Length: 410
Image (tube, rainbow, N blue to C red; front, top):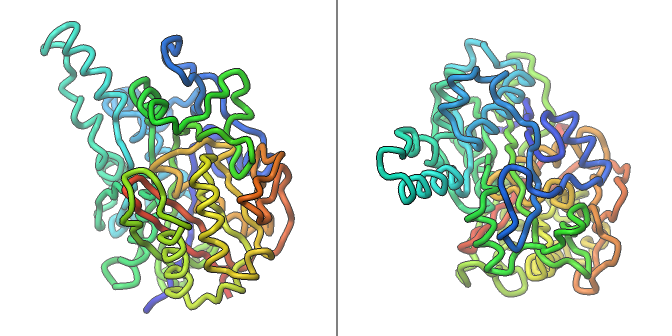
């Protein structure tokens, strides 16, 4: 099977728009979680989130097109624009052969909520005719293909918080099987809205540190009390190694392995002992011909919930055995919040950059290690380290797990 490499990167996150700014923020360990600013929160039990403040898509899409697209689509377009330019494909004849898969967990839930309120309060005539294009998840990949004239395979994956990672893995699979030579893949999400915050809070999944938002997302810390909702997008340009070499592209890393599995256990809780995620990790390593002892860095799913962080630790211990103690592991959600369907895309970009720059981003707010998470989770400060192989984990409601493995190009 052919090799797949990464030749372009793009990010929008609460920690910054653009790869350089977002990566510097991730390495600093400074949380971007703040009080929600876009709507009143007085009646909500949770009033904090990882918002992309001051984001305006008008400069990218123009005023009319920006009005006709929802926030998650705008994030996806901004990340796509950066990744395509980074790969030197933007406005290139190569674009017509490029495919696009964007993972989106929820889509335009804010637009559905707003139009539902209009319907109830002011009647059917006030519902926007664009409500459905605003809301449906496939509009991220669809809009990108229209905006950048990408005529290759185009679809959306919706597997909750594993969506972005599944999108990257499936794009790589399409390149390997010869369906195309170049793909844009990752995740996008913009689900910070009252109904979603209220629902997650009712499930007791969210941190309630409203008075200290910058300390709220604390993966693997003994005092973690839930995740914080984030938003944004992370996209990668993937292509066959031969195609990249022919056109003289800059190659960041090889996407060497991909694994996926199901817990078959519970709608929202991870499977016992992290068994499902362990199979996903193992399959990613096996598919890439990677020995567990070859892995240097794990970008963990690390949501800052009690169950996830402990069970992910168990999954890592199961797969890596004694080598687990030699791994550098971190969760960047302490900085960005949990970006749901976008998380896997953003964290894949960070994993690639860890290989490129030889540095492991820290786990923000990890001040008190949890005895149930007894591994090296790179607390507080980034660490210089040669990273030859990095993996990125994601898991979603429904028990869906995904892992991608990146390797320094030999």
